Length: 312
Image (spheres, rainbow, N blue to C red):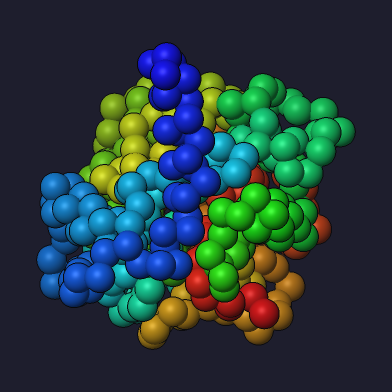
């Protein structure tokens, strides 16, 4: 068989089997240790080693592809102090440390959902795109209902393609899942450390965080993956767009095992900072909110794939 055809066939077969391997648990060995960050942060090397151990246990690569070509990263289970320490610069109310345990591994989008991915699932984008247009730019001006519907339709597409094991579904990330994935083993204000420059993430470069050097101010979104990832391979967890979460917004985060705020409130939770925010609003612990019906040029979406059914 010609080499290029063999390569294409191999890629197709891998894609078809990628998520099904999770259901059969290709590795029957003892379950790996979860992440433990209650006393110490992890180095990038340690975080990646744990991620790889869990990917091997699930029988998949650390970064996988679904039926529309979206890439997702394996996130191991673990325990961490959600929120920020008292001495973190520009700490806000509602960031009090809460010990959180995420009991199961999950997958989360490597990038914010792109306009190209949105069109493949939801159809044409009818609203004018004023802060970045193109298939590799993140989608924005979507409300919470539309973001959740994207996850529902993506679940349906993957099931029809035979790529979802029974009981798995896409949904919006919980508050705790989002922060745990963002931190990737770190306990500093950002996954870059306790400073943040717009050379590292897309935000208002004239307002860097905690004495970092000033940098560019694009005044718009950037194509996904334009800035460095964290240790688990996730991009744009600081800046570019805020992202809808599953939780309703309450003033304080919720601790415990697999926490989620499902009691209705006036606002829905959003995470991260946007392209026009100051650096202090792009910290790992920063929590904010928006009305569920809001369609802003600052809010996008990043789905998770999980066995949990928290939104049922």
